[in-house]
Image (tube, rainbow, N blue to C red; front, side, top):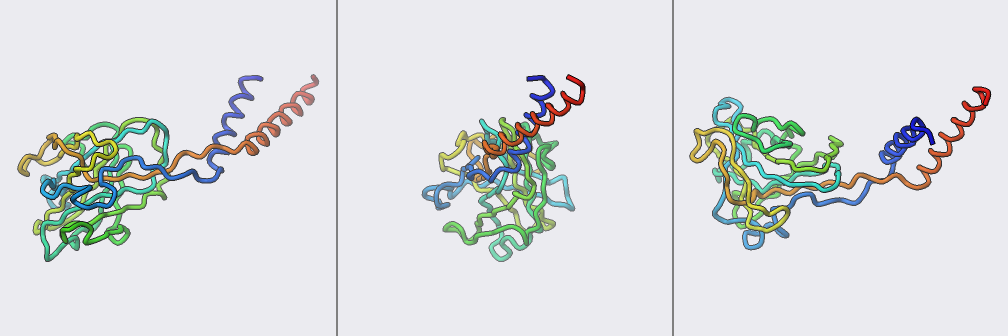
Length: 245
């Protein structure tokens, strides 16, 4: 088989994979726990603030945590257990959530925009389940990112979920997790402004309460591959005869 034909069949394989039925859902990262309770999932007294003030960028700060993929996957949803410091206001001052994915550990200087993904989701499009734990100041935020069709190659990624907020009357945070989930390696970091107590770039010695769901890259069906291969072989035979062989 010629190199040209081999490359053509490989291209058809990729096209068929894109047309194949969607694969089963995959759990790419889970540091929230089975039911979200403080007893089985989240720490009751360890919360790190994750703020984004559009009017005062010098205070931008986030919590980032990593997960590693051994196989490619398509991103579907991102979830985060959030905390609001103001009981009377709650989550009403959040205008949007920003989901960032980084290919390397983010520093205080590049915490705002992920190089793999940086997407602002209006709060009206975020599913907030509240009260979610025994505290009325917490909520599980779920963001649907399936429309992005983002294919994640094998490797390590860093995730942050940031509240977009223009008020200083409420601080928003990401809960720390005591659930030994995936990856459960206690290496979340707080990055961003050094104006907050303990900010800048520091290890938290805990996991951030994040969950990432995806889907496996679908395999092309045997029938599609066989049919595509036969079409390519037929076209090659026609060209061979037209060339006078």
